[in-house]
Amino acid sequence: MEKPVIVLLCVLLLSALVQSSAIGAQQQQQQQQQSIQEKAAPKYSVRCRLYDQNCKLEINIKESKNFQEDLLNSTNLKIFEVNHRHLKAIKEQNGTAKSLETYEIPILTHQVGKAQLIEITPDGQTNVIAQVIITRPYRGIDIAFDVFLWVYCGLVSFIMGILVDRDLIKSVLTGNRQKEVGLTFGCQYLMMPLLAFGVTKVFNIKPFECLTLFIYGCCPSSFESTKWSEIFHGDVELNKFSSFISTFFAIIMMPAWIYSLGSVLMENAGFRLPLSGLALNMTVLIVPALVGHVLAAFLPSLKFFANIANKLIHSVIFIALFLTLILTSRFYTFKLGNPMFMLIGPMIAFLGYILGASLAWLFGLPCDKIKSVSLHTGFQNIVFAFLIVNWNFPSPDVDYILVCLVPVFLQTSLPIKLIFLAKKIKGCVKRRRGAASSGAVSRTGKVEIDAEKLPEQEPIYENRQ
Image (tube, rainbow, N blue to C red; front, side, top):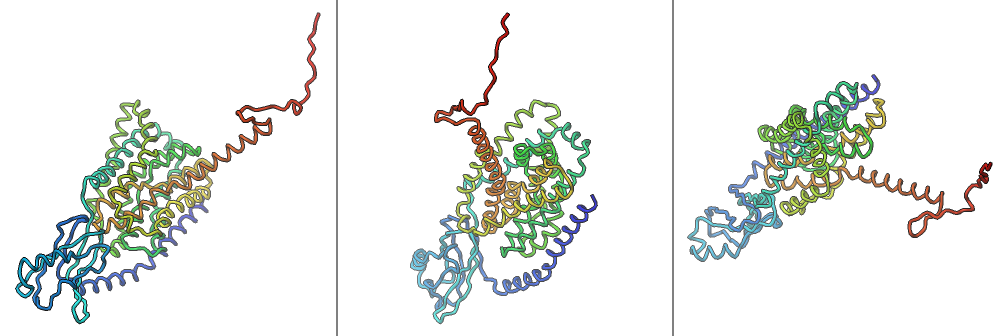
């Protein structure tokens, strides 16, 4: 028992030391970048929503005789461009350029992001006029996506509270399972945050994306692990209890990680996650779980309906609904995606499966417990990570970083599904081989038995009196 504990502590300490070694250099680079940006900050700024047809910028031109509207341009034409036709029409209505002190510049939005409006002078110099920020639109489909995230997280927590009743909690706590419960908690709230932090440092990705993946690594376990634990004959009660406990401990552990180790990532991103927003997101996990747990004590029949709802909510229907909403409401964000995210995000879950199973094996747990610990570690509450990022992060940064969570949502259960498919194929092959060894299978599906291959039986004589 002492050897695995020593190994676990050494791994955690080494990972923390390695990851903290680059903090000083990153802080210096961030300070230098901020000082450069402050010196080159433009005088004007404007925020427009994507697809807004009335986005305009008013600027004052002191030396109007040297100002040429045809030389106005954007530093990134994929984000916005200047409507020169409209600008010329305004000039003709207001008189000559010499009599103007204020220009109203129409902006055509194309994509969320940040770019600068520049003027190219006749002698070839570039003057930065304004900072233009294009934020996400706010349509009916965008409201539907936001509502779906809140309802989905609350509904899953409510079902979990019903299924994890007092009898299950007593059976786990009084069943000499302290080692398994402690290991699942350690893997969830000690190993996964450090693992997510390490993965973000290995790959060269932007600060906001690093912070998003780190928040995902700090999220509690998903209740979906109970479904796969039942399929693979794991300890289902352990998975239910661990998911229930990790949800309540998220009140302490998530702020502890985000505002300690995550503060380095927030400084690099120039953004600080508001504690009030995080606390509001926590209520959608805690309150429905408590309500469901209390109702289950007075209405035990709710368990039957909760089991059905638990299977439906993790089925293809809800996955298709989620993908439909995010594709229709955030379709423009997929143009911003980095193909590297197809590997980076899911790698955290994949390593969680492997390391969770390895630690369970080092602690000498039986096979069913190893499966449960591995599934509990790899399945993070990805929808809750979507909710935190979508609710608290500013636009347009949130539109860029939501893309890195979509591959995690799609591929977290991919290796588990492949193992399940391989297991099914292996079972079918074994059954067909068994049928072929006992007799040939006809085209109609019936087994044809070869009488010559049957063992000879002694004749049975009846005793006649």
